[in-house]
Image (tube, rainbow, N blue to C red):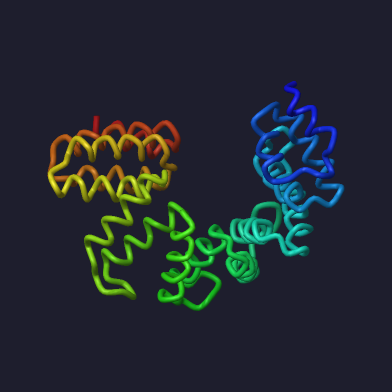
Length: 265
C-alpha cells in the first residue's frame, strides 16, 4: 500500500472527489472499504461513488438494490451525479422496478445542476419521447450544453442534428466538426461518424484508423448496426473492415451473432 493511500485511509471522513479518484487507482478492496466508511460519515461524493462500486461489483459484492439506496441518500441532499445515477437505475430497472417518468425527473434535477450526463440522459428521453413528451428542440439545447462541457456522446448527437437538419438548419461542415470533436474525445459513435465523413472525402486510411478505435470501444448494439453499414460502403477497404466488426460482435454476442459472422467469412 502506498503512503498516499495510507494517508487517505486515515482520514476517510474528509475524502474529496480527487481523493476518491486516487484511491480507485489502487487496490479495489481497500478503496471500497475507505469509500464505504466515508459514505457512512456522510461524504456525498463517497455515497455516490459507493453506489457506482455496488453497481459494478468493483472491490465489493455487487448489489444494485443497495446501490440505488446510496444514490437516493446522496440525491436527497442535492448531489447532481447521484440524481443522474438514480435516474439511470430507474431508467434501466437496476436494483428495482423501472420508472421512466421518475427517471426523467432525476435526470432533470441533475441537468439543472449542470451535470453533463444528466443533460445527455434527459435529452435522450426528450429526443425519443420516452417517459416525457417528445421535444427535439429542448433535447438539442441540452445536448449542446453537455457538448460544450466536453461530453463526447453529446458532441456526436449535436453533429447528427446539424447533418440531418433537425431543429437547426442543415450545416454539414459544422456537423463534421462536431463528429471530429466527439471522436477525439473518445466516443465510439463519434469515431464511427467521423470515419464515415473521412471515407466520403477519400481519406480512407485515416478513416480506417478511426474505425479501428470505434471497434475496440464499441458495445454490442453499436457493433450490430455498424457491421451492416460497413458492408454497404463503396470502398473495398472499408467493407473489409466490416469483417472485424462481425468478429467482435460474435465474441461479445449470442449464437445469432456467431451465425451472422459465419455467413460473411
